[in-house]
Length: 388
Image 1 (spheres, rainbow, N blue to C red):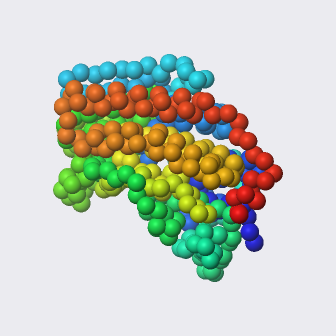
Image 2: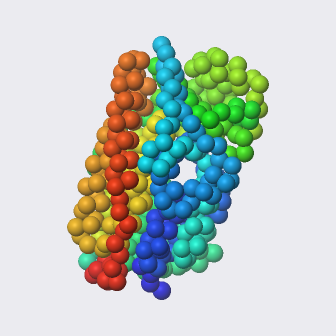
């Protein structure tokens, strides 16, 4: 069996890419080693670009109908002062949202299925297949205890931070970060709000993000090098202690709320930007571009690259892939560098505020690029060109 595209990883980046390719007329198989509708660690926050794309793809109404609260403002809490920024209507986006991954990923997988994608869970990909030229022509995987081989014109790795596809194709790193934070996540009921709230204090940061079912994701970050010493085998105690250190008033508010899930942690990983495509392969989401969670921008960039990549594939020319690489790197580099500096957690109030202004300017540039995209042009020769 041969298809036009295989996407490895059915989370938000992979599901979105598969959906867009299928809507462009491709025969797509989407595989994932996990199960449908499962959760994963996430800050959940969608920035304006991601909301714009979900609306364009027809998925946003379901996000809203599922009870995801509308975010109307963002407050930055610094050591010396607080600053609140309202979410003003722009490019048709009137509010931001932060859906649970059990909802967001599932809605995108459902949209991919409705678009004609063949979706298979419980498939563990462990190798790529090459032709005599060294071009990727398919995958090898275990499914139901049996070895499976599937051929495709292009294999897309959307399989996360420790991507098997990126490792198998030896995708080079173009940019590497210097800093990383370790993060503890918890979910609370009784913190109803319509804003994102971020705290930035030297040596630590925190975020409060309203999500589905009346819950709020509250996360705390410290330098990765300190993370294990802070946790000392008791994540819940470290989480409570750090919240109290960062914001005593917020810690008091939590006293009137209920934590509804266990505290979970991520020890941290330095960011990177890998090359995004090569002969017969491409990368999207964390597989190709990972940056520290400090700026909560990962899903937004994953959607951006899913759309840019799908458009390049549908054009099917060397020039289209070169344009994808150039645009992706241009829109990513400054966001990555600023996030890496914020993740150092070693700045003054004035310095981190300057970094936030720079990040906001880059988000605006990214948003303008997304808003300017015109409907994708797909010809009947696309898939023949891609395979040649």
